[in-house]
Image (cartoon, rainbow over all chains, first blue to last red; front, side, top):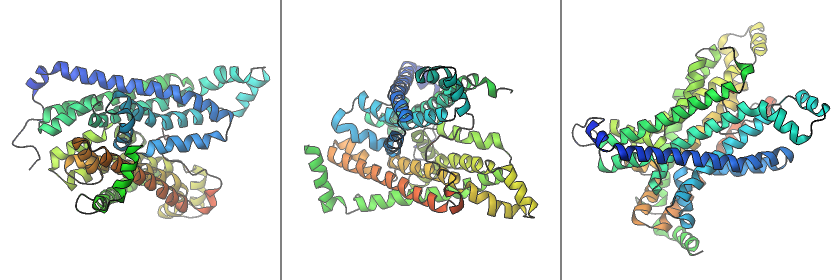
Length: 220
Length: 235
């Protein structure tokens, strides 16, 4: 006995055909929210990473703060923002961005720290300034780890966007919620499948980028 | 701010705490569901991850299962569980376990596989059996990372349990969803705050457990791994 009354097919293809526009709109909204959130996340994370590297004492503070944001459940975080930003896209974005920070920062710092000391010293010996060593030597070596962080952030955000449907800006999450409310399977199956597909796609594409950026690990 | 004063008042009102939709009952439901889900997930995931890591087998599966898990939106998993299992505790529990198992498996595997071959050989050379090697050498060394996986999963479980109200289970999410529907900002805010605090407490308590389970001998030489998905063997 299911929650859904009567025998219902998993997907009613006529509904899908009739609602192609709606589905594409939701998909577009989902992609948009995800990309905007991750891009803003990168913009905020970058100075924090640089500051954490320059002044080591700052790093634990950054980690703890972003860790707290990361720990707060998404629905709670979205709703805690409501008194300030209401049921707007901003609320969804602030929440989504908060989750990317820990992942992005931690991976970038770990990647930069992993640059071997002798490589760094060689750059210094060749007369590289600190900034030039960072851009020309450390960054390329840390790039795979940084891209790995972006990849995790993207996949995580794709999933979290569905939850934002509960505050009115959730892309494919709206289809899932709609299916749940109307006890109609098709939209929720379509929404879930597309969301998983989107996450998988982001994962595969970024993994490829990551591999290409670390040719020394190739061989297979 | 007026809202904050109202929220404080809400917490001060005994009516908020009592009854089947009071904080006490919903919090107990939330904690019970989360604890049960974490316990079941450990029982499923740890033998698999530790076993594969000990045997050095199934690397591709063990390492990538967390990736697959991450791609599953918790909301969608809950709703699917509802389709297959009717309403209430069942689907909520199954969905939480499905979401918690992958990251635990990967962490346990990576932790075990990370034990150095030299150490394993030394233990073998001392005449240890496979079980002794596992129990006395590998497990203690792997413990911090294994526990980091459990901690990450547990925090995620507490978070997702908030959504369980959507599939007819109670928990603190009930107040959030009800408040959103009836535009009761105070109830929404108070409940969200409670959920946030619960998640943070879970994180802090499990971090303590992780530290306790880390053998004293390696506490200083290995940094206790933090929570969150930095484990990416593809790096």
